[in-house]
Image 1 (cartoon, rainbow, N blue to C red):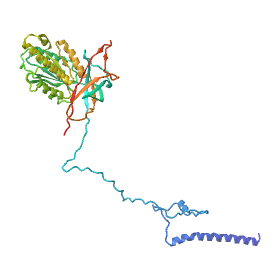
Image 2 (image 1 turned 180 degrees about the vertical axis):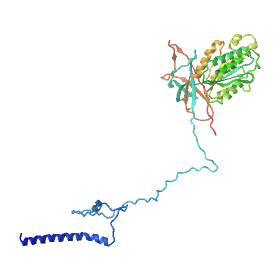
Image 3 (image 1 turned 90 degrees about the vertical axis):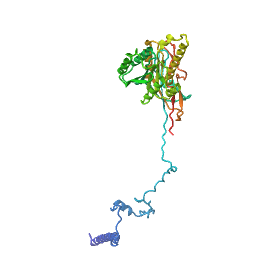
Image 4 (image 1 turned 180 degrees about the horizontal axis):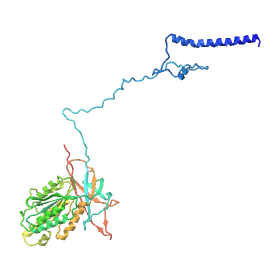
Length: 415
């Protein structure tokens, strides 16, 4: 290689090295000026250095074609609320201020509910009619149809008071009463609660409420041992005795029953017939079944000549009508047996009526709590809304009776 070519290569290499040194000196100048003036690079909010990618993005130069550079100037960011600055409170709810002298009051609205127990029995055999549906029943209150909202068939234990006339009117009446009470006791179930009370001029508790029917039978046997002995009084105050029975049953919750076995004659009660009928209507949850005694004796002596005989017949006719009224007002049944052989069938009919019923529940359209007496009417209809017709296997039409309480007293609103 010639010396001239060698010198040219050396000069070219030296020129390149000088250019690199100048370039490095030029790049280091701004950094040295920043350090000498005491400035520091910006830090992140946590005091850390920004990432290398961020530095490269900040150091981007403007594009050759113009346009915005990497630094777009000041950006207006929304101010973050301070932690101590709470949002303005919501407006206070308006408060009702009672007039001066008036205390705070609260209002409670009660929706009245009426429960109607309906027994459907064949008229001839007193057999309960099963298999009916809610659509077969129509309930009216004061002539206005009500919507039935609850329906079920009940079969529950009973709570019953046997109220029996036992006076010196005649041993035939006492024998009929004891036979009726005995026949009823034979059909009691182990879960039933039964008590027995007798009356003449006064009332006498024979057996308090018990589930042991043997105690009732012992009480009947005790009275039977004295049946031919003279009784204390001939007078019978049936109105007062029934009123006292209703008082005793009012302390017991649920549905209650009274089996009234008597001639129905009232001698000198403090209550009148109108008063006891009003009390019977107002009694809630009590159904009265009545059995008139002395049927055979009255049948044999009815229509005898003489004014006194006619007065006696009229007295017993009125007494029997009173007994029937007690049962009709409460949805019960009335019987007038003449022979002992009739009693088992009569008692089975009473048991069927007590134990097997349809329970209907509705909210009266008249929701006023005014203490008024409301009349109830129940009827049976078929699927087309026509009166329900029943037939036996031979397609013979069967008549039936509906047993239910035909009225109730609305609650009195408390003023």
